[in-house]
Length: 387
Image (cartoon, rainbow, N blue to C red; front, side):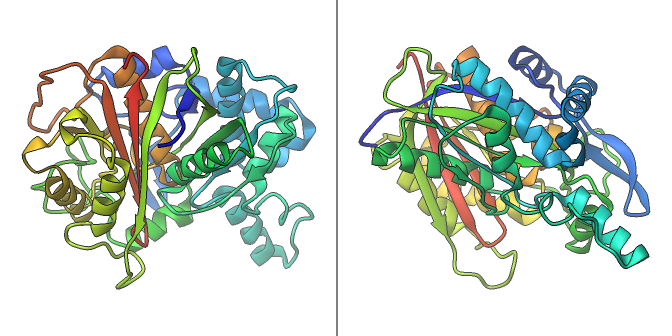
């Protein structure tokens, strides 16, 4: 990349908590964050926010009369954004852009409004403005009183990493010096669960680890949904307060055979990884945080793509979906957070039921992958600040 991009802060709200120390501690625990809820007419495993995060979200909702009508996907992103800019030291005097997207958007609120319409034949006054896709970035801008550009988008499960691509593009173009980027998702609703079950990808496992992400020998799909939001602060140049630097970015899209298709060796991932690694010796990549949603095809095709790209130089492989489930549009930024934590602590976080992988050198470079329906892959290469 022609200019250094610094990640000067990252914050999230998820089943792991909302403070870096808590999140890292929870990553050391081999237990999952899954709970049973009655959704789609049956008991269903999901990964909801932790209790402390729920309290903070409730407090945020009550802090302003206008916030009472917002969807959780908006509130999650607002809370994470407040925490991120506080860590980065940004104030209302800073001009920064915002690009926070979502795969499904205001799912819960939309379902409520639609059900009311079906029942009464009338739509609520705020039904439209509170369920539009641009809802998230607009409310973050309002809450932070920012004056820069604001962008919302939905590129399914690679939404958050596409936000990073956008932020990098704005910074490198000279049109901005700072950008707040990420993704948010609140998909633990009846209709969303029903849609995943209709695709035959939702977990029916009763094992200790019901999401078998990175188990390449599984015989059934084991995806489980989680909720949360994450954002990071990007700044142009090599900043002293950087957590890590973005060394490479890659992206690619496959030709579709059907709505959720991906090729046997994930051509899109091969292309995106090669692009992100164009100026990097493959032996320098220490860890890959895989997308690996816990589906048979999704996990295996990404693994094959990694084999194709890295050959005998395959790095350590991990994912967090065995623990917190798939958070759709937020999943990429939560994977990026795991990558940054591993760089900061120089410690690999593996998958407890997978074959043990032992680091043989310090963790200095981590590649993060994400892909969504339609084969739109993104790869981000992070470099430790110490390099």
